[in-house]
Length: 114
Length: 113
Image (cartoon, rainbow over all chains, first blue to last red; front, side):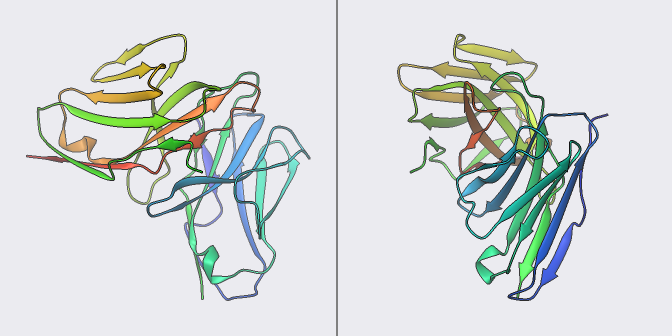
């Protein structure tokens, strides 16, 4: 059974803290993605990676960075958390090779920045 | 600039009737379209997809229709069941984009008894 896991379901941080969100997939997928979901805005792509050590900016990369040192692991980093980064963060992975491949999602991390 | 739009934020349908969820897109380079279902406190799960070379794809109670000239797709659920109550996201992908998806804002479906 395919699986994407995220390190925390709920996280509370203070403004200015550095925050790490970890995502691990066990499907040997080439592509990994980080989204945030906000009411009325749907899922917005922050960053994605199509290979180890490769990363591409999504639609809203400002205030975030990512790291992919191993194929199965993709980390999202908030260098200095701000209240407007309070959101649900979703990680996903997919096979490479062609467009339109189904993405498999983790359960999400609800981050609150105080 | 919202390239994928779901203009109905919510929909209520009686159990056993048809649910129709709509999605419009503006980017003519999109080649694949997917529907995802999301329950609260869970990640989205893939439901059904369609390639731009087709106009219909069916999987059990779920059918997706694509009208390329109108840049419109729809998801039909027949018959609707209470367990279908969830938020449905439409997503689109173009070629050569590492399976990058652009999502709509979602439609919350409520199936009533």
